[in-house]
Image 1 (tube, one colour):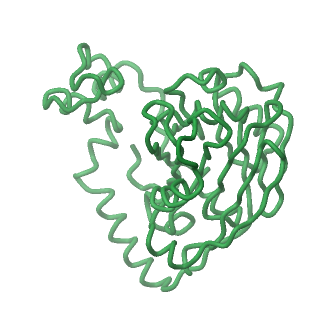
Image 2 (cartoon, rainbow, N blue to C red):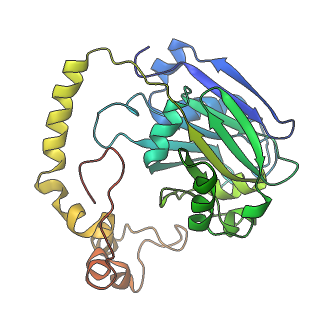
Length: 290
């Protein structure tokens, strides 16, 4: 199938083993996108009654068929796991260069299970899988960890946790390229596996069925992405919606216990732009430029 490699990489941190699995075309057509594919794999791989912070709960990184193509805004990956916050399915999206690097490993999804005997850095480069010592990274925050890993593996893109993930704080995030998979406690699950960081790189490219058609469609998407509907994001970033959501009473706050937030104006896009703007840094493969 075009847009896919048709393979999943399975890694058992407890035993230190890894293996490939072919993905059927039927499954790939039925469960489209990173969240779709990850949900399919989670339903299949997570045993009933699994402890979210136990070794049997899989941590799944999945990408969509658009990742690695020219389609604007497509550099997204999904993390799927059983959420330690809710006990139900947990999914979180992040946009970054990591998504492209994940796809270039030659796999559409990576399923991580088990618990490493010691704190570990998982390194995947094309068909090579290594479990490296991460003891020197303990206690570092996410930014420090990303820098330390990329100093040793300069061509890799990384996903990391900080002290919150190490200590299984239930709302800990997974950080990458300064972005975060920030929902459902994915960082806590990563920490419960003694997995401090994941570094990936590769050379595999996906095939495209109709290159000219894709380029034409993408030109239209690029034009829309640069139009008036996205101008607020270029000026204020995604916090541009915060005050509007607060006025409507649909702003999730205090871990979704409330729908408004007192003092929201201090966190608004307007306030951040006025008082705290350092620089503008857009996401990979995105023309919106938040």
